[in-house]
Amino acid sequence: MQTRKIGSFDVTSVGLGCMNLNHAYGTPPSAEQGRELLAHALDRGVTLFDTAALYGFGANESLVGPVLAPHRDRITLCSKGGMAGVVGDDGVTRRVIDGRPATLRRNCEDSLKRLGTDVIDLYYLHRWDKSVPIEESVGEMGRLLQEGKVRALGLSEVSVETLDRAHREHPITALQSEYSLWSRNAELGTLQRCAELGIAYVAFSPLGRGFLGGILDAATLGEKDVRSAMPRFSAENYARNVRLLAPMREIAEQADCSLATLAIAWVLRQGEHVIALPGTTQRKHLDEDLRGASVKLTAEQLEALDRLFQPSAIAGHRYALQGQKEVDTEEFTVAA
Image (cartoon, rainbow, N blue to C red; front, side):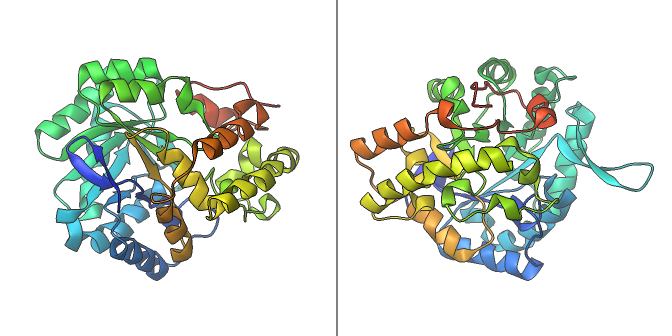
């Protein structure tokens, strides 16, 4: 399989985001199904696996760790801190963004235990806690690296300005942010800045949270599915967005591939420093995603996709108001 660089790591250009196995998109699969999906990814040669303290409030790391442990010498294991589940006085676990040095250290040490490893290859700040200077958060992460608890540092969902500040404090190896045909905020600066600084751009949700696969029915999303609160998946906006799929399907037919494969192939053509990080719970969908690394798109097909998915054609923001406040990315003005 095609490989690309994340710092000193050679990884498959299509990795596996493990979030879906425990978190966010409705009812997760059973633990056994999750283990089977991870085993299939290993069999297919995937070498980049991404989890976080947040996913399932630790359950995802506990699931992923034992499966990947026998393969640690041939994979790159990534996790994230700074956003995790915290048990309140009422006994309810809630998501909390906390970038204070002591919290990041505790998050990392907890992740190491759940993953059953003595070092995390790539450790991300999941969200920048804007009440804490980015230099303080990254500085503590740098100390974790010096102590051998992590091997490289990453950031998630930050702007060019924040990336530059962090990189001056300690070299950043990867920036992970949402990037797909219908979420092109990276093109407002971070994609280019990463190329200039030699930082890998890890594109999460390259299938637009399932939209670009062409099989999602937004009307069936349950209350526990985070997409149900995202403006792009509202009934009105989704009806407008779904019109983009028919012309996209024509391009996929020309390229002799599925919509999902086409979406991955497009992401990978946006730069040699770009890594696609889809998530799935089904083996057949993983196989479609991985095929994106081998599909060759013509200049005409790429141009047609760029025209079709102009940011002005997308109805609704990526996140609802609260989620929008929690990220630090440059944003396009999109259709209301």
